Length: 115
Picture 1 (cartoon, helix red, strand yellow):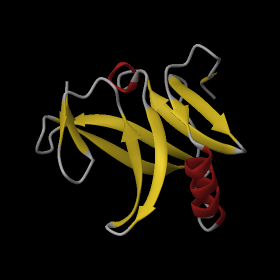
Picture 2 (cartoon, rainbow, N blue to C red; picture 1 turned 180 degrees about the vertical axis):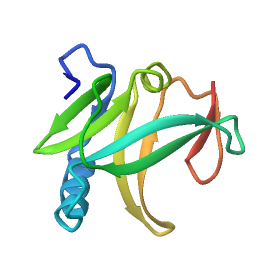
Picture 3 (cartoon, helix red, strand yellow; picture 1 turned 180 degrees about the horizontal axis):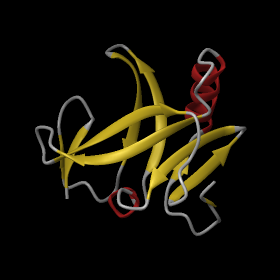
Picture 4 (tube, rainbow, N blue to C red; picture 1 turned 120 degrees about the vertical axis):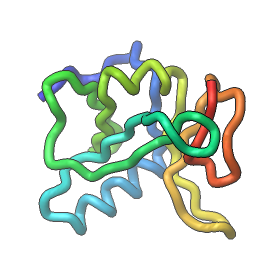
């Protein structure tokens, strides 16, 4: 089931994000983890993608916090190095947000970025 993240993993999951992931997965019978990946596209060059998945793949890195599992593929991992995965609930809506120190620019919606 992929390797388990250690202290050297450059991505962190906040307590708020872990709580929301657990709430979402509790309502989805087939989902066991949240996959976070980076794809080309979006208004700034790259975009974050979030998917519910039943299990991690053999080459995935698995992050765990408070029982919540976040899965990142090894291709996306370098683009997320040093990032924090958070969940924000504010006036403009609720969403997972990636605080990525590598991003030199991002769009207003927070799902697209450039390096």
